[in-house]
Every structure is written in C-alpha cells, then in structure tokens.
Length: 88
Image (tube, rainbow, N blue to C red; front, side, top):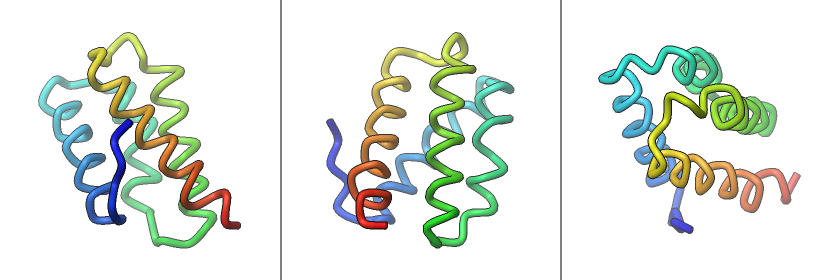
C-alpha cells in the first residue's frame, strides 16, 4: 500500500490517474470521479463525496482500468478511510 505523507501527495497521485484516464478516454471512470474531484473543498463532506466517487469508479468502471490503476485506486480509498473519515 502506498503511504501518502500529506494531501499534496494524495492529490498528485489522483491527478495522475485522472490524466491517464483522460488520455485513454476512460469515460465511465471520468464520469464518476470528476464531479467530486472538481468540487473538492477540503471539508469532511467533500472527502466523503470523493470517497464515494472513488468507490464508484472501482465498482462501476473496473473494466476500463488497468490492474496497476486498481491498486492505486485502492490505495486512495484506504487513505481516505484511514486518515479522514476515521477522525470525523
């Protein structure tokens, strides 16, 4: 599992995934993630929305993703679960 030291590292990893999905035209994955990613404001509800979006990508756009991307996605999901939502 990737350990992100801070939010900047977390969002850099997420941004790389989104850019790869744009390059490959992974429209389902982009559909599920872009709304919460672009509307992110750092508040607890926003983290929850981002978590739901990442889970939707994992569940509903799985066929578009490469195995390494699924691993990265799982790391992002676990990070939100561990760091953010466990403190609220």
